Length: 450
Image (cartoon, rainbow, N blue to C red; front, side):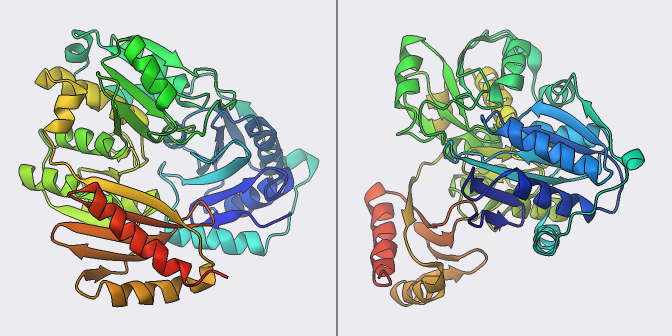
């Protein structure tokens, strides 16, 4: 077996190549063995076809070491966080590879508070996994495995509590939900029904039988965009497989994208909240403009949900998120949440009497370019040095990878936490300028290729 991609919040691998049931048991039991509480563990999965196999193995492994398991079957990642809190669990395990292609699956870990485990806890899990030896208990001490009948009620109630339900219901919005055979439809259909929407759901069977690449990007959503026009939808919500992220398509059938998901939701939330906001350092500066408009202070964190929520908690932030389509509303939970976005975008539409395209147009716009760079990880530090020499006139931050800021643009170059690549993300007023920054980074990286 090859080594899976392991980060402080979990792991991802290709089934049969770098991830199998034995490794899943080892990793999950290593995590649970280090928990201070002996309470039950919530286990869920995102609908991928290999999820049931891994779930059965993990539940059996945890039972074998004496831990009770609460199994929720198919559930969205943010729902998992709610379930951990609702059932007083010691922790949670979500089986998901998020936006990765179908051959992948993975494991994401939750602490008892219902958020993804922070970096320090993640480092301890990695160490425990490296040193792990399975120690099973006797037959009379094995853990019980119970199945949850209701996985959505608490999450639905929390999300509805952040919006004016009657106001949204009065509009009877025509909505398309593209869950793309992931977990999003489980709660998504309940949410849209509760909000009085007339909706069509695409890929609502959570079986992992993806018909396209599962990441909700403009290129991958061309078919959905065409369907949206035919269905006369006022908005289309396109989730990733574990439904912690969502991209928008507007009433004209135009891909608005993931960055605007956070921007529109944040702009709406700050109309009634005051306080600090946290986003990661790869997200659009639209959030900075929005915070300035509402008199709130914006703080940047390293990329990764755990890093954002750490800073949100320390600053008692009123809102946060990542520009990949994942708002984080502490009124619901400290997890990226596509359902928060769905409800709050609809609430913004209802409150302001505006379409999605109009809500987006009201926010100062920038052009963002996201590229992948092939480079041996041993050469990354040398690449950073070359970039520093080339962009010597910029303000430099090494919070996460290396970021260069100018008054009107920025570029971030950092290793991915979920794929064996380096990402270059640049933003400027014009796409040509953003693309130029990414090209410079790629050209400098090419000097290190074999």
